Every structure is written in structure tokens, then in C-alpha cells.
Amino acid sequence: DGGITQSPKYLFRKEGQNVTLSCEQNLNHDAMYWYRQDPGQGLRLIYYSQIVNDFQKGDIAEGYSVSREKKESFPLTVTSAQKNPTAFYLCASSGLFDNTGELFFGEGSRLTVL
Amino acid sequence: EDQVTQSPEALRLQEGESSSLNCSYTVSGLRGLFWYRQDPGKGPEFLFTLYSAGEEKEKERLKATLTKKESFLHITAPKPEDSATYLCAVQAWDTGTASKLTFGTGTRLQVTL
Image (tube, rainbow over all chains, first blue to last red; front, side):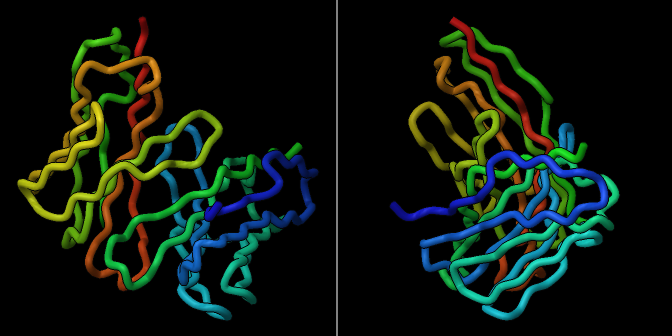
């Protein structure tokens, strides 16, 4: 089935460690996104990519890094510079030229910093 | 800056008790308004896109409407399986081709027997 796969679903990290969240899609979408969700707050955009080997910062990019080496993959690294990394992370994708704007989301990865 | 405000934060309904969720927005130029459903611990699931004032869309017990300042998600005769958090989001024309959405904080709906 077509969709977006995020892994791991749950991740625990010690302070000072970097961690990478995986996101893979088989929808043949050009654009991919990373959002962060915290209790009582709306989803906030971290990074997005419209094409392979190119990506742009979203509203809260500090302390995060991404890469887009393949169309299907958009991993997110949460670095030790991120001051408050405990959150629910959502990856999404969309077609760029179908004009619907609809985002397809993965199941999310919950990161807890101990 | 684009803003989305959803109310109420939480809503508890009995099965069959119809109600509406509100999404107020300010955006530089509305390209689309989106409704998503999110179950606990899951990613949001797309429900509707509305593009212009006066537009309405329906899906089973849900109907979404749009004005120039707000959108409503009407739930008719809800069932317990409609319990979820409903998210509203907007996309402005100046975001280019990417779907950069601004989300509200959601309305948590609980439907009881």
C-alpha cells in the first residue's frame, strides 16, 4: 500500500546525543515535510523539501538538520543543540503540482529525552 | 503572520447530539483551508479542503463550511467512533508550490454512548 513510514515509533535519548528519525514515502510525491507537535500547540514546521538535494528551513529549524538524497527519503536529525527535543514528530508529503495542497502524514515518532 | 484559532478546545457530546467546531483564521491570502482528524498517537488524516467562501463539503456525518473569516465543521448525529482531535489548517498563496500549512491547536472531541 502507498503511504509514509516513520521509524522508530518511540525513541529515548540521553541529553547531548544526536538522534535521527527516518521517513520514507512511496507515494511518488515531490515534497516532504517535518512537523513537530507539542501538547497545547499546533503543528509547527521544522524543515521541508520540494526536490532532491534541496531543502528549506521552516519556522523552528534551530537544532535540527535534514537531508534529501533520494526522492523517497527525508530523514530528520535532532541534534544536541535542540534545547527542548521531547516531542511528537510527524513527517508528511505532498504532490507539488496537483494544486490540492493536501498533506499525507506518517504515524509519527515520539522522542523522549531523559 | 498567518494565524488559526480553534474552539472549543474540548467538546463532549452524547451519541446523536449534533454540534459544530469552529476555526477562525487570518491569512495574507487564502489558498486553502484544511480539516484533518487525528487519533491519539497517530498522524493526522485528511478530511477536507475548502478554497473559497461559501464552499461546503460533506463526508458521512461531517460537513465543512467556509466564510471569509472562519470555517465550521458540523457533526451530525455523531457516533463514538467520531471521537478524535480535529485540526484546522490554512495555506496562504505566498507559500509557493509547497504545502506549508499553519495549524490550529485542535478541538478534542469525545462522543459517549
